[in-house]
Length: 264
Image 1 (cartoon, rainbow, N blue to C red):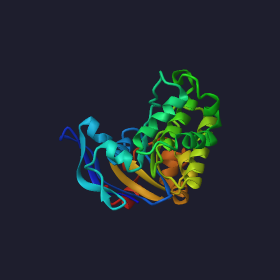
Image 2 (cartoon, rainbow, N blue to C red; image 1 turned 90 degrees about the horizontal axis):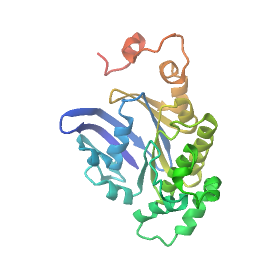
Image 3 (tube, rainbow, N blue to C red; image 1 turned 90 degrees about the vertical axis):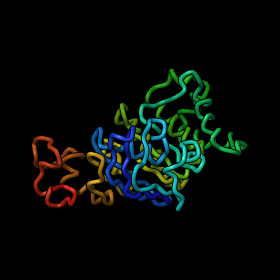
Image 4 (cartoon, one colour; image 1 turned 30 degrees about the horizontal axis):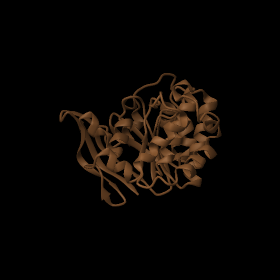
């Protein structure tokens, strides 16, 4: 369904951020992209959604295909109309609008808006709390409620693929658990394909079926969620387990060096 093929990304034709990144997302699948701050996760999402163009960035090598059509040369609005919707980190809401008005904004990407009430009912089905708050000014809602609103707004756009960027950021553990549980339901019940970018590796691997680990603009490891959970390096660097008492770079782990072809 979505194929990212050996892409490189540069900003201002000078700064190389991604180096040969490849990943696949099948219809109805949920995958996760893990990595530390600055690894290139958000840039990968923006390359897919077309938002790179708003930041003087571009895919300089390789290509991105959606349903066998190349999309990395399209603008973000055209990609959104194809059904690829990004939920950006930082809870970017329209603070002066009500919760329901924030949800309705997403329908403007659709040609047919006659299903607005049905779409709102679907969002309120997954997020009952938003129905109670629908007339409240969104700027006065909590961080968790705003994150629910953003996922709901993406759902209003009838996404074929939802790109979620750090939905757990700044939220209490119980709220993270609730939001991730709802995201899993949306994936299973609506058959929406999801690419989840997360630093909370434990939560991400609990709901995704497949994962990619990114470091310094490259994919360094991939596999099923089960295999990644059992991988000693993933345990050490992302799950908080392992024999080493101090967090180190992948480059300092000799057995990791021997396994990874890209490290000389």
